[in-house]
Length: 116
Image (cartoon, rainbow, N blue to C red; front, top):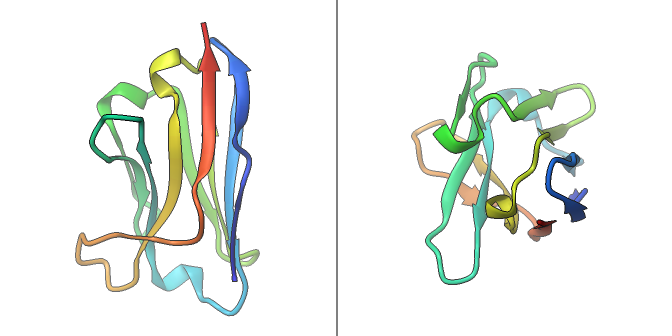
């Protein structure tokens, strides 16, 4: 079972940490990430972390968001700082089991709302 938590409502400039936890999986084998979708907008991939630990970020979140993965705890994190109203979206934990570049939603999304 996959559990995604950590969303909420914060003022601009605030911080949130999202987590995606699952039991019965071997996180060290997967490429994982976070994507988001705001109402009326296309889904965009916010951050990914490869098996090696290498990370990639959407340009608009670089320097503000940090993705990390605790393989021992089977948990994926997204630390978000200096949040902006344009970060408001439903955030999804995504996984690419074969690291082919094709990510799929894992678990339910969590809403992040940033007020100005």
